[in-house]
Length: 297
View 1 (cartoon, one colour):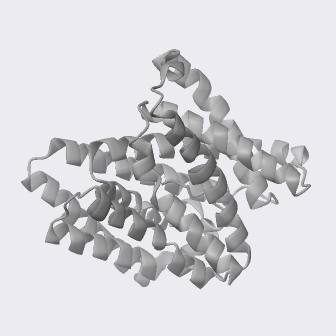
View 2 (spheres, helix red, strand yellow):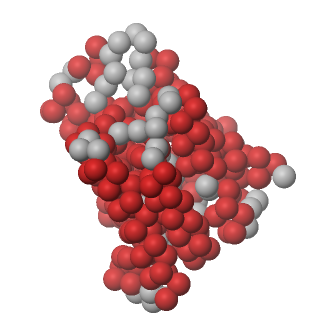
View 3 (cartoon, one colour):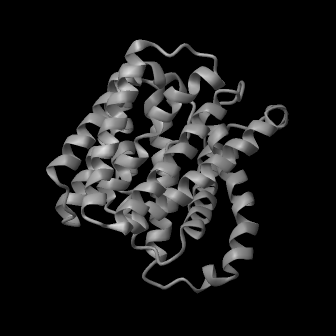
């Protein structure tokens, strides 16, 4: 029961990322830099408290895929945070949950896995659902909504790349892997942020500071810690089912707290998208267990 509670709490924490990010008066790349840096420090603290050590030999042997996966993690966060800025949290979340579809499409080429009829049907249904969500934005002539959905889909593509790249990282523990990826993402984003934004990051408004620490410590650090702790004691099917607490919480926040509206077509499209990925999730969970969820949401 403890594992299930830990995992559910992590999903609730991940589901609140959208509303936290919206209260930080920085660019998406600056938010990504701060969340990865603060989250890495927090997880390092936990790592040493439980008296574990990082195997630098394993880090060296997996260096290429660690760097590539960290680039994917950084891109995932940047575009997800941009998505929250341009569309509703519900739309951004649904766009982001297209990631399992990208994984299914790419698996035959990257992992040499056979694409079953079941997966092909799930891909088709998910695409129909996404077109229903996007179609509402087109009919409403809302360019900002379409831009936000596009950013959500790009974030999903980066997250899919993260899932697939993590498949090639060998023998590293999940917490250790996440710390290295967050640390590498911080190092990669640091020059990018300073060359594109300068030192504006140090001029952040005082009202944003509490939310920066919430994003870094709670949404990233504690969220990942609970995620991995809970995952250890759960079966794959339970993880697949409980993962949908995340979008459920995000959509509830969008509707109840922020009063963001969804049309009946968008609701149906979201149900088709989430339902199709849920049906296929039993096969994808092996990849999800190696990812940093984060992700991201």
